[in-house]
Image (cartoon, rainbow, N blue to C red; front, side):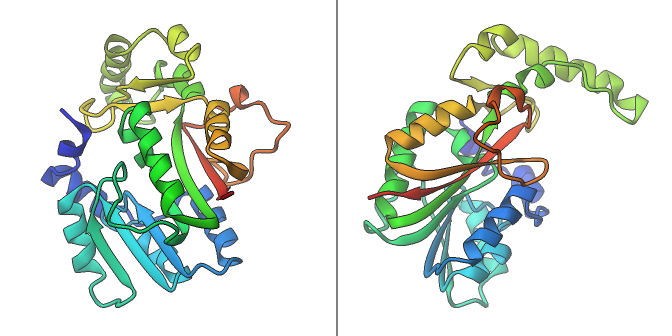
Length: 255
């Protein structure tokens, strides 16, 4: 099933509507953005508005988009009292509803950019580049391929009654994907990691490959963040030693 159809299901929409907290790196990025004059912000993959109440405060004009129409409906209901907030159904691969150089800050959180193939994310980055103002900021998170060993390993649950479910999860991960060693030798791969009962497939990438990709699109000041702590990953830190399940990035548009 295509990921888009999954995010239209009532069960998934209800699950996302319960999420309101920011991750540690999102908190760090929010604090950095507060120091900048953010007139207009685009929140891609906004879902049911998890990030809206936090990031919407720093922008004079806030727009949230998602390719799930049902999630956008919830956003419109939740934030209809705020005149400077607006929401639209839109696929990030084609954001022709927005003019060039429209936004000071574009956010694509919660690994939303991983919901499409690596080839399609090229279209997304090109579109983000287009709608960003010169020197505008882009932030996103992406699955870390160096987390594969942990993903393929049995993780002992605190509740012993969940041991069998974890055993099944571990076996399914191995059955539905390429071998661990093969994946670790790839720059990126589409992986079924067990999310939403293995119905979704996400693009996992090597962080250093993402840095090179951003550089090729002329993004500058590329700053990666640890998922667990929200701290900046220093330039002397080797990405292959970091097993955080996601890595966050903040960069600037040099155009």
